[in-house]
Image (cartoon, rainbow, N blue to C red; front, side):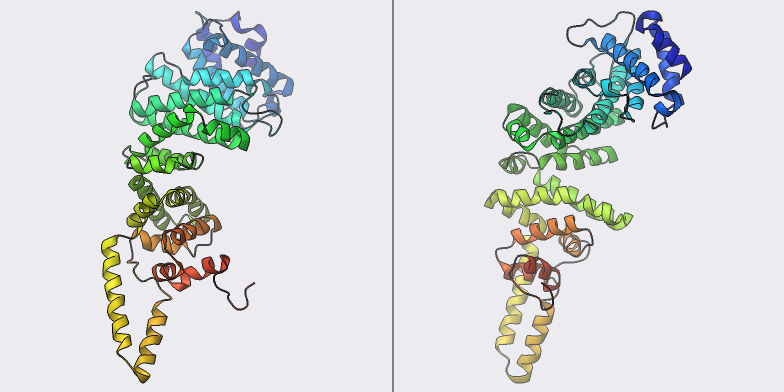
Length: 417
């Protein structure tokens, strides 16, 4: 800390780039687990550290027409970004790392196109700084569009497209590329959270969001054998909730429905084996909401989702069975009829066809979960898939369906308001 402060007070050009790399690296290593720097050095000294980090980034990133420093290379840029991330953990004294110019700096650095390995490190650190700064912006004080939110959106999209399509920037493949992709997706999600409804509506109508949509489609088609790809796809589901209503048709047209269904099923399986509780159940909600949006978008997409959850070949079997039971019941009289009718009603408490281990069985189980958002989302999805109340009860079982029907005012339950 003392070494960094002494160098900071001397100014950016007082020492060489290599010396800055060494000093910044020692600072970051020493304070990797530090959440607040000001208690260690005082708020005024923290502001000195912030000032010199900002100046180093201005020299290395070359913002607003400035030329990149010839003496301070990308190595300094990467270390300065890492130091910035540590200083950003505590909002006090870090205002200059959160203002509009800082956000522009991170956005430009995130699109680093230099040496692949160094460029990757710069981009990853820049995205982490950008995400931290966006998240910690004081709410309601300034329009996020005024803060350069649209430029950030375009910059993040460029990084994301480069990761997915392996064209630009020329980052290393494998795990490094996946880390960058996850950070870019998180950044896009945070931007969506910070835009006001009016800003979001205007943004959704632009060409940039269309480009983003097609990149998200590409991500959904990636092989998710690696955990980071799976996690990236879960981030995609969050972003899809902000896409225009007509985008459901794009997902269907580009074969994304099976991918979304598969993601939801994998989450359900993970929940079973990991016993994740309420948090794991809540993570299901975005995927269920995306499927529900597809159901409501058009009859074609509704039937496609329905076939994925309730296979027609399985429907054929139980429908034939119910028809046989109905004919048999009609042929009975007296006590035999009463017994058979009671048995038939008792069966309606349970789903007509939900073999253990199937997607429909896992979804039906979620209807009685303790976590409310996923329970509501899955109940709405299954209700909207059914033609009427009777089909909903048949497929889900009265025991699972009763709460949804009560909330929709279709039935009343004694003792419950």
